[in-house]
Amino acid sequence: MEHITLLLGIVIVTALVFDFTNGFHDTANAMATTISTGALKPRTAVAMSAVLNLAGAFLSVEVARTISGGLINENGIRTEVIFAALVGAILWNLLTWLLGLPSSSSHALFGGLIGATLMSVGTSGVNGGVVVTKVLIPALAAPVVAGLAALLATRLTYRIGRRTDDRATAKGYRAGQIASAGLVSLAHGTNDAQKTMGVITLALVTGGVLAPGSNPPLWVIVSAGTAIALGTYLGGWRIIRTMGTGLTDLRPQQGFAAQTSAATVILASSHLGFSLSTTQSCSGAVMGAGLGRRGGTVRWSTAGRMFAAWGLTLPAAGVVAAGAEFLTGQGSWGVSVVAALLVVLSGAIWLAARRRPVDHTNVNETVTGEPGARTAPAVTPSPASAGDLSTTIPAPPGSTGEPARTARV
Amino acid sequence: MGMKIDWAALGSVFGVSLAATVGLVGLFTLGVVGLARHESATATTAGQGGAGTAGLARAGAYACFALCVAAVAYGIRLIVA
Image (cartoon, rainbow over all chains, first blue to last red; front, side):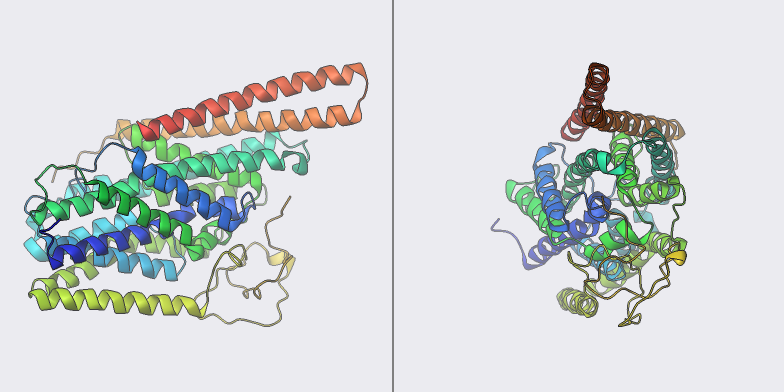
């Protein structure tokens, strides 16, 4: 490790920061439904997910040989390009977290790599066709597949259990949800921690520290696994709230159907040769489960904002990364400026989030208010309008028993 | 611009996901409902007939859960392998 330059050091730290944001962005995928239906207490849920993410990082022996899956030409890629790509991906992850929108960390990284590569070497470095096959189609197909599976499964589970008391089955659904959520967490650890290991390894190769084709050193595996687990444990509560209670109101049966659909789609797709996007699968499964219950609704205004974020992820991360790459191309002062901007902008987003904090105490409130929305002291939500609460007033912190809240059993 | 979309793979992902999700959720629900029936049967009917139904419901439920556990184990194997 004696040959690690300052730039390489910065890239490694940035990659671990990305890994961390990846962890807290994606906690929702595994745990949002488990938390919103009360199957697990919020902190227990994120702790369990963190442990399984960490385990997943060590379990898989398959090394990520490519970080972009052929999206860009990685031969002769410059270390600065990787840095710029990570900056774009991190800032997009933080912005969507501030807005509480689930979006794909992989797509953010892809977008960053594409933008930085376009700025660095031009269109010859990017494989446009792969963008369609690896990003566009998987993102479009994932919510459809997972949503339909969750919808049918929800209908079936309600039909089979229609003459059974909810209280008698609650424990069973709880166990089922925890098992499915555990599988999603484990799969996430193996997939996404691998990605960061791939990024750091590629950076070490481009920096001349490792020979091309090397396996990641142990310290890379340990630090990547730890970063994603830490991020998962801190929990992106804002995104968990959107996915768990913002898109629809979930009951244990629906939570179980949604989580099982998500786990199945993730595992089936990654082993049948057509990877589908995890975030899109999980969000789609939640919406499908929402529509599957009689009288269940999806809050399309929230879903619409989420769809918009999905569409913007690649270009937005790409534009930021292209700008960052332009600066890093100016020399070491440019790299310093980009690093400083990353710290300042991340801090600003964090401060903005602190103004309306979401944590384990208020994660289950049925609120999807816009940032900066009014906070009314007295709230009287009418039960009749429970179909669309996204436009109503946020409940005061700590209030209990609001009518729209998911029934606990 | 090598744009080759593997529709067959996408189709099989679609079919397998749908079948596995619906199958597993159905199986698990049968188990959960079976156990609930077992509990109510033992609680309400103290007679011999009730005990027989209860035992059958419980055995069926455990069989369903065993299949679900096998599916989870297979899932873990897929992740680890």
